[in-house]
Image (cartoon, rainbow over all chains, first blue to last red; front, side):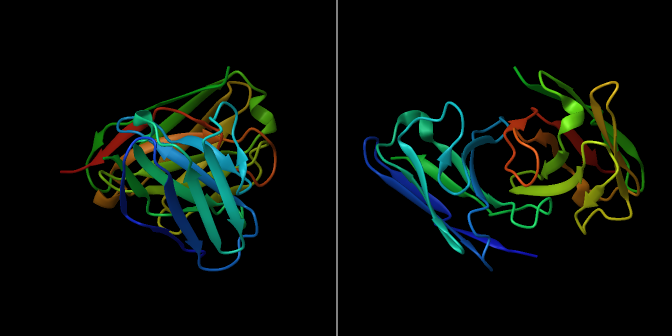
Amino acid sequence: EIVMTQSPATLSVTPGERATLSCRASQSVRSNLAWYQQKPGQAPRLLIYGASTRATGIPARFSGSGSGTEFTLTISSLQSEDFGVYFCQHYYNWPRYTFGQGTKLEIK
Amino acid sequence: EVHLVESGGALVQPGGSLRLSCAASGFTFAGYAMSWVRQGPGKGLEWVSTISGTGGNTFFADSVKGRFTISRDNSKNTMYLQMNSLRADDTALYFCAGPRVTGPAAMDYWGQGTLVTVSS
């Protein structure tokens, strides 16, 4: 099983500043990597797929990068509505998806 | 617009059974593999099971293999998760999820989830 490890566990960022979240795979997943945002009481929302492609309706301040085993989600100018938990997920050996444990993004 | 609506969650005793449903609308349901993902209280996301568009291929996480079965009725645009021999660690919010494209893909669409509680 491919293990996904996210860091940091919690991130506090001031609105308007940049937020950088990391995700590492235990083996290469090429570009088969997605990022999701989840707010309390809601279902996850797809932000990024293919490591760097924004999903429909996702603001341009969200960007993804990386391939292989190291991935980054960047929020260029944090807005107050961006709080929540962010999960990475690989689909390299689809459909045996695995998710990272999540990064909680707090608004400072 | 795509809609996924889960139902069937309940409080059940350890060792009991439950069947979840996921009703889909807004897309050609039979054309896409569909999945169940669960989230334990205060925990992260765990993939549970996936079924191909035709229903001919099914996949399970090791944690549920042999206890859960997945099926679909494309005439009703509905997917099911039959859960047997339930344990306390099966307690979770169960989401159904699906992709926007065929083949290996992320989960574009999610329902709001249905809560399963396993407790005596």
